[in-house]
Length: 248
Length: 233
Ligand SMILES: Nc1ncnc2c1ncn2[C@@H]1O[C@H](COP(=O)(O)OP(=O)(O)OP(=O)(O)O)[C@@H](O)[C@H]1O
Ligand SMILES: [Mg+2]
Image (cartoon, rainbow over all chains, first blue to last red; front, side):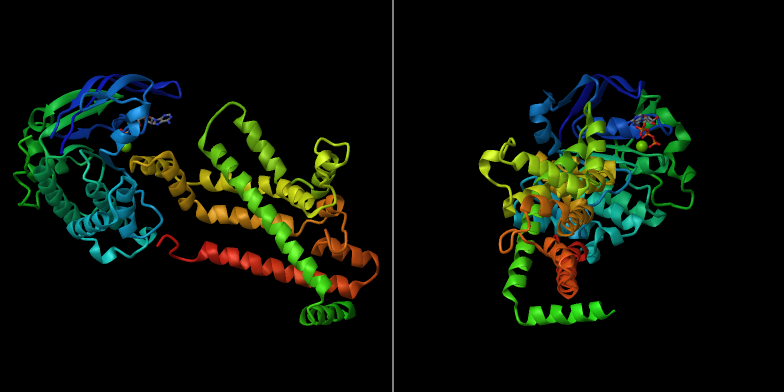
């Protein structure tokens, strides 16, 4: 299941400042896009608009060609999953954190439990299932947050610096795992990152944001230059990631 | 010291002998205060939640009013309720003055702003990004509110405890709108005041000790509810 998300003539102001100004942006069905740009460029805000959590001042958002209005926003939100910059977990156990959202989206009890088990296993947090979310380390909660999003089997996955709290080996294995998952499910994905070395593991498509605008969009090589694609320049100690994946 | 030990002794005696007068006063106190607290929960939590989640003109004024209401002197509330319920008052036709219902009404007025104010603070202190995350899960408005209250539950229970503390300890309003009628509207606080005025200090001390014990038991139950670990299972 995949979907296409697009915005047209979007403008968003906050405290008298223009924070987003995007004429046209399309996230194609099955596409995986990395979003980069300096602090305060508007990446997180764009993600929240795309996640249908922030209603822009003007502009049209369409999911699979259908314009989002108040009446269909909830149904549309249930096709998306968001991983925020901080892993915002409910104050309950790891297992319930993954299971409750599924129940909220109308997944039956047995199926919800089955999927919860599956995704806890895939993200290596099965041993934490009974732990309170508050007692987790940063990396453990980030994994829980990612497991929660993937268990929802969304048509579109939106992630805001999902790996920032992870140590290098964890990040590397999670990136590889996520790359596999995204390419087998062909899940449409947009993710924000400051760490360019993460990009080749997932995709070659990059958008650059600056001052509320998308100023560049295209192949990682054209945008970051030849050296950026070689993971060697970011993680010279790591041989495995040299080639990256994702033909785009 | 003498009075205190004698008070203790007579308190135990009255409890042990199940003095019917004291028992009925105690039951009435429990009944009136829990019903009033319950009503203030029904009024206060929704108001606190709405004020925490919305922005509209006049909201600031409402919030200051709630904060002001948290410190309302019970005597003033009693007087206002009395004026409402008196025969020629706006609610006079219901003949509620000097009934337990009148006490419940006055106490609910005292506790509602307390519950609303604490609930407002509890919900406002949640991470605003958490609210976005809950919406991102695909919650309906109702599911959203339930998860929100769950996340704020410690603060919400503090609100309930504070509201209950406000009504169980209050004497002025109960006296004024209840009338301290023996066997009908007399509660532990009004009975204590009466016994002191009659010079019966042992009895007054005994009643106070019962009031303290009662408050302690109920607040402990609520605290236990608040502090237990895995409520969501
Ligand atoms: N509610 C708001 N009121 C005023 N300004 C805001 C508000 N929300 C965001 N901004 C501003 O909008 C700009 C974009 O913020 P955003 O969080 O989208 O940046 P970002 O690209 O994600 O940055 P970072 O890399 O630091 O995460 C920032 O300058 C921020 O201060
Ligand atoms: Mg950001």
